[in-house]
Amino acid sequence: MRLAPRHLADLDPAGRRAWAQELGYPGMRAAQLATHYFGHLTADPAAMTDLPAGTRAELAATFLPPLLTPVAQQVADGGRTVKTLFHLHDGIAIETVTMAYPDRVTVCVSAQAGCGMGCPFCATGQLGLQRNLSAGEIVEQVRQAAALARDRDLGRLSNVVFMGMGEPLANYSAVARSLRAISEAPPAGLGISARNLTVSTCGLVNGIGRLAAEGLPVRLAVSLHAPDDELRDRLVPVNRRWPISQVLRAAHGYFAASGRRVSVEYALIRDINDQQWRASLLAERLTHYGTGWVHVNPIPLNPVAGSVWTASRPEAENAFVETLRRAGLTVTLRDTRGREIDGACGQLAAKEAKANG
Ligand code: SF4
Picture 1 (cartoon, rainbow, N blue to C red):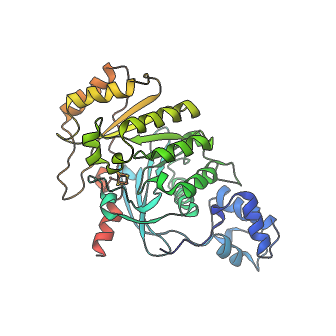
Picture 2: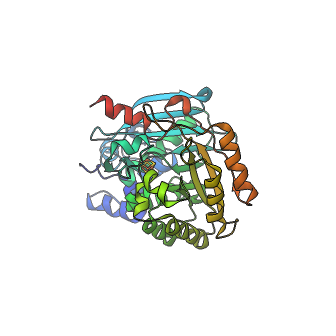
Picture 3: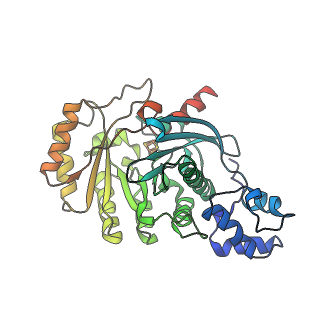
């Protein structure tokens, strides 16, 4: 696994300054480059007219090396959903989806190439873990999405969700650094409010604790997918290490520490986890901590080609949601944006990985 080249977005402002000085440049060059990168969303030396003409190209190549090369793009929803397949510097593929809604523009980023968590219904899970992404590679997905949203007149990028490929909390340090670089005001960062960042986990209890201690008001989303350990052990194998009771305790602890309501994600899979008794059990387990701390997001499963897992019938979906609502829980049936373009996380990159053998 070759690490990504070092990039300005891997470091905090003091580290950037020190790096520039180490290489013999005035420390202010780091702040000037950061203004272009985070403030103007550009890494193009031609646009950096405040830098000495003779060193512009060299500075950009050193501090802002290209980390992501777009190799394919799929557009849906009348141009309001754009999925980009990128190659990292070592040729590994990842993907990023930008979605424009009437009130916000959201990008869904990948935190790892592939994923080692092995959930059997998920395209990324079938790939296994290829490698962790660096903080720079994560921030660069957001920077490119912000530039894309601006250039396509979709509006200003306002939200970032870590729901693409990989398990963010299994790549903790890079994710935590990227959260800071995304949320700090320019020129230190991209200036997207930490309250609009969502970190999604399949239930790494130790990572949830670390994130709570980070003191950033980001939203936590927990992919639960089953209310009983017997089924969850199969659907989300990491459950064998951290069972549901521990995951929910940690999630509630996150709410208590951050004051942010936790999202519980539940992929509705036909005849697997969408029965009435499971809806009741889910309601019971969540309301154990009251109703105000959690928001449930059931989402019809986006089927992976060739898989036996498929989305619930609409009647089962509605009955499931009703049961949760009757228990006093806030529930939003998530849309399936991007379904027409290989919408489930990892499907585009998974396809490419398979095609490459
Ligand atoms: S569902 Fe999430 S955690 Fe599970 S394999 Fe897929 S990407 Fe990894």
